[in-house]
Structures are given as structure tokens and as C-alpha cells.
Image (cartoon, helix red, strand yellow):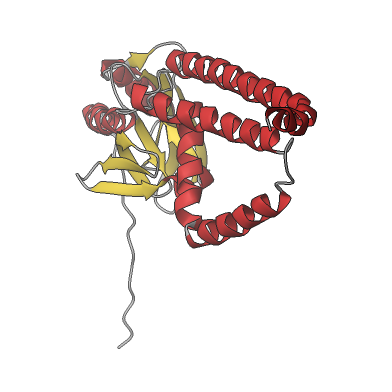
Amino acid sequence: MYLTFLENIHPAIPNIVTALLIFIGSLILARILRNMLDRVLQTRGVDKEISILLGQLLYWGVMIFGIITALQRFFDVSAFLAGLGILGFTVGFALQEIMQNFVAGMILLVQQPFEIGDFVRISDYTGHITAISMRTTDIKTLDGRLVVIPNSSVLSNAIENFSRAKELRVDLPIGVAYDTDLDVAKAAILEALPGINGYLADPAPSIVYHSFGESSIDMDIRFWIETADNNLFDARDEAVIRTKRALDAKGINIPFPIRTVQMEK
């Protein structure tokens, strides 16, 4: 009986050895790739919990592939995989939106277009990032609302990250009366701008007159700020106040539209 067992198992020894080598190789490769991914994510500052989750997904993905390849040495796993494929397709179709958000969350965590605390604009929402999960991104808007955006929507929209820019240009449109000395108006505004918090002298500010409006000569005031000292909205607020005061001091009017209505008797 023992000899019969050896005779039966002898032809399978090469397949057993090959399957063991495939399994051990997959185990080693999975660990190496998981460690490499962990180091990459650490250099990008990804949370430890997220690093562990992504590492486990990669580890078990390689292991499952290795196990299937090893089993292929003993029997045809095509039917088994076909069954798993049908089941996976059914579950994936039912959870399509969730899976889209999950995959988008992994892409966002790896690419890191923003971090918690960054001041961003995503779609129609502007505010600070308060949380990033595998499914959603949370933004606290300027008016205090907490908006939870699915990661698939975040990834499919343009992302403006104001916190990543060290310098930002502030544009402020304004108009002055037609009887204004334009050189005096420009000089008064340029003299007032340096008082703005975070103001940068280089790049130099500029004032460009660009059109004749219905009741004013219109211009664009452009200057740069350092985001470490000020933000876009507060800088524009200061610019409006200082520009108004500077023009008032020179007796320069900022006109408003006037309509004349003629009533027939």
C-alpha cells in the first residue's frame, strides 16, 4: 500500500514543488511590494491607517494571484474563476458608486492634491479641508457649512488649492469718474497698496485702464500677496478699503450708474 501511494504521488511531485515555489515567491514578492508602498506613502505624509489599508490590499492581491497560479498546477481553475467573475461582476454592479468613490479615494490619498487644513475650491464649494476618507472628502465652507463630497466627484472636478500657492495675485476692478486725472488716481492707489497685509513689492503691482464704462473709466488693480501672511479674500477686502480712502483723500469720485427717465404727459 505504501509503495502504491508513492507510485501515485511520484508524478505529482514536480507540480507540488512548483506550486510551493510559486506560493513562497508570491509571499516574498507581496511583502517586498507592501514595504515599498509603505515607504512611498510615508514620504508623501499619508496617514498610517491608510498606508496599512493600501498595503494590505496590495499584499492580498499579489497573494491571491500567486495562490491561483499555484492551484493551476493541479487542476483547471478557469471554471472556478469564471464563477468568481460572475459573482464579482454582480456585486460590483450593485456597489458601483461605492467602488468608484473608494478607488477615487485611493487616488486622492496617493496623489495628495490637498491635505487636511488646506484652503481649496472644489466645484461650487470653497473652504478648508476637514477630513479625507476612503469614500468622501469633508469641506468646511466660508459660511460655516460642513459639506461632504463623494471622492469620485472631487476627482472629476477641478481642484483649486490656495494653500499650496506661496504667492497669489489679487485682482480688483474699479471705476473712476470721467473728469478724474487718471495719473493722480493711479498714483494714489499705488501708494495705498503697500499697507495691505502680506503685500509683495515683487512682482510689482499694476493698474490697467481698460474701458470706457457707462459712467466711469474702468481699471483693474493687480497686486501680489504672500499666502503665509494673508489670504485672497481678506487681501481683497483690505484693498477695497484702502483704495476708497486713497481716492477720497484726493477728491476722486467712484461713480455709480445714473438713469434719466423722461415721462411723457
